[in-house]
Amino acid sequence: MTNPADRRKLPVPGPKRRRRAVLHLALVGLVLLLSGFVAVRLVGPYVVSSNLVRGSMERAISRWSGHEVEIHGTPTIAFWPQPRISLPDVVIRDGRGNGGKVLAEIAELSAAFGVVQAALGTPVFDDFRLTRPVLRLTRNGMGRLEWGGEGLLTQAIAEARKNGASRPGGENDAQVGSITIENGRIDVLDTASGHRLTLDSVFSDMTWPFMSAPLHGSANLLLGGVVTRIDFSARDPLMLFAGAVTDLELKFASPSAKGSFQGKAGVFPPRFASGRMSLDVSDVHALLAWAGMALPGTEALRKISMETTATADPDRLRLEDLTFSANDAAASGIVMIGPGKSGKPRLSGTLAFQNMDIVTFLGAFSLSAPETTTREGRSGLLDWLEFDLSLSARSATLASLTLTDVGASVMATDSALVFDIAESTLAGGTLTGHLEGRDGAFDKGAKLDIALSNADLAEIEAKLALTGPLPLGPGSLTLSATTDVALWSMKPTDITGKLSLQAGPGRISNVDAEQIETLARTRPFFRLSEAAKNDLSFDTLDSEAELTGGAIDIRSGRLEGRDRIVTYSGIIPFDFKGLALSAEMLKPAAEDQPQQKLRFFVGGSWPDLIISPVATLK
Image (cartoon, rainbow, N blue to C red; front, side, top):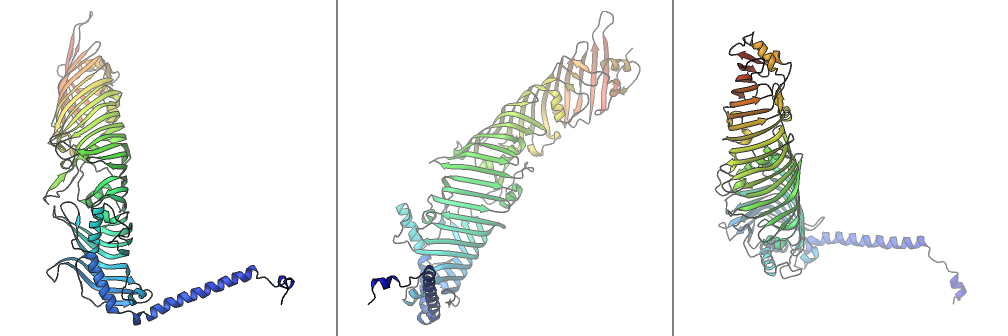
């Protein structure tokens, strides 16, 4: 026997020896696992009945789809590196025989299975792979996808709809696994409109462990010939397929646009409950061309982006914390969509812009798309929506003019489309405006009323790049005009109306009245530039004109100064390349001289004008 003293002297295994023992056990375990893996693969063909696996797979597809399954090719089973059955040329029909409607055609359908379960006669399938499948779906009048049949999926959807949610581990909670689609096509026929949507070249990977489990996946596909990627995740996919609202995440990206949604929503039919959504369009015209839409008058619009939180009430949708940008113009606000008086949805709310292009903004109301109900013609934005929006902008551009501190509104109903500028500042003055579309649209013409008061005429003339002998000083202008063509394609010859201008006190630069009188005494005509030593000052200036034929027809004009009165009338083309005026300059009598009157004609190319006295002064 060994006494305790001797036992204390026995060697104790050190750290290195313990590590070697653990490593040895791990290697033995790994070898056993690999051996078992290889052994199962080797003996699989001998213990697994291929007919059993094929029959089980065929029954599984039928159970899932609820329809008749036809396999026209010869099935194959492979055991390396994973047991897998492949069924070529699979057809799923809605009914028996060739008379049934074809719902799906699959060039090859394969799935993995467990050798042990297959050897026991109950194979369990996983990792489904569909090669070149063609799925034919129908969208009914309620916006839901119809598949029909009494398969597991249909039963599970019905049970989820009945319970208000999927029940984990329920009677219809079948195992699914992963699903891969390689080069597939999905055709969706809308029975209400007769239109067909085709998703082509679909490559997708989805993970759906059980029917009650969340569904995650991604897909690359051709949508209308455009490469598009979609990432999606549904917390309760059965409720989603049932047409209910559930937690949903969506992202899409294409060469011209990308967007996302995260929140509660439904897809069949499309609707929102609440969530954060975003849209970023990097090429507006490419997106419109792809969608078959037209947006005239917005050729300068290149990109738009939008981000908001959507909240749906029973009868309206609120877009809160809305941020929107078009090119470099940004806006924020809140928008609501609810029932309108005409029965169409009504979009109302407030938008605050940093900078706004008025013509581009108004052009958006002429958005049109192919008609979806009659399959012919086009329908416009105002065929779908009513509008009642309050707008504000720190600055707004209209042609080459810039308005500041703008308060405006736009209202659109079945019979009218009105854009009002309630207040704004232009060149230090106040501008208000009223624009009313013809026949409820801006693409068929419009009526325009503008009132500008106490503005700096010099600043406006500079913005319009006008030079020459023009009135300078504070002035007010009213304009009432109409056009029969779209605002964005309008030319000066398309405008008719009336114009009124009042100004003063001010001056007309480079017009010397005394020099004009002096030259008129000795010369039958002379250049206005020869009488440009001083300016012609005035206390008041009043002009009334008509706009017609691309020109300003001044019917009456009167300029009153300290020592002279000038009346005038004539034609000034809109392009200001010339003019033709007849004028009379009256110098009242003074103590040492009688009244003097000079009648003359002013014409020629602007600003190099020619003055021709009607009668030479003596």
